[in-house]
Image (cartoon, rainbow, N blue to C red; front, side):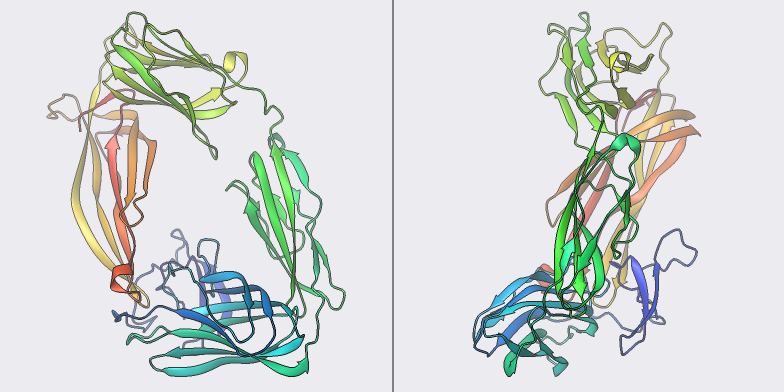
Length: 523
């Protein structure tokens, strides 16, 4: 059956109930798919009833070693069996175990509710060069079971997939142990493979580069059986054709420095790693555009308090003004990098209009009070591709400006609860966030609008205290009312944790309108 109850899963995998044996069939669960499976509790497809457990359901991990040699592992990873880049491993690190030591591993608190796990263990060296007997044992309030019994040699590795580690609803240790003892048999040493990620590469972003990574690997006493590429440094934007082959194709690059790590695995599980750098330059990286900003001498009560450029795509916000610019100040001249930006101009005081001249055109916004004025798709470059920002005492033209009045209302607040199997829940808050347009400031006469509606989205997480602010816009065409969104926030709980730790995230989303061309914000 499909495990559609886990909201964290982006990729669905079929497996057999009871054994956890995968059928090998997978699919991406997309909202646009006709067979999209929403992550809600369905007793017919996933007959695991979510129940609220008592305290003591945290998964604990321990290494117990009764031998007399120093043992080190190059890599030990415990992760959900469907681990992706958005789902971190429960534990992933090197570890050194001393003779006769019992080691409780410091784990990251799980951000997901999971029972099926994948364990990867790669050894490094044993001081007395004796092989290890290894038992992977799991203990809960329901009893103890040995999941794996095997041996480990120097520079060898093993992967155990689809291990079933249920956290019981009646409490208990939920203890995962790696129990190791020395054998009397000398370890069969394995020579680790050597990875080669290829020579460093430099390309130009203007060429829309497509790069084929040149990975290779050698193994002196065996052969390479697996390849894997990970990005460790660089911008978010990129596409990798297949991370599990030696020479995948890399595309969708933006300007910046990327670093990718190649991991090769030999036929006895040992790994070798190497890194390659891809530098994506702009041919005119040192060529800047020009921005001129000034306040009309007649606009004596008006000030530009801030100018920001926000790149079209990845990149940092560029702040060009952080002290007020008034009519008695000289013009502000800046030389920001070339590019296409949304320009955010913050105004205080009293003026007539805010203008931006660029690409042989003038975009004028009637002054509507203190606040933010956004100019979209401003192109900065050489010469005539500069931009001039003017805070003027005059209007946007000889004709009187006819304004619409915009009002934001929130109706139909709802709160729904969804089960997140096996031991979680999600509280969804939604409402109709509507924008209406009127001919008058008293909001009695509806008006048809065709404008770019500027608005701000503020997302606050009560658990982390993080706040994110996004200023954006949407096209409004021939309508007096539009539904902006229904999303108001959500809370996600992992009921298998202690009560004080069950709330994983609690986001609240609010909306506010911003000034724009052709309308005035009322509420």
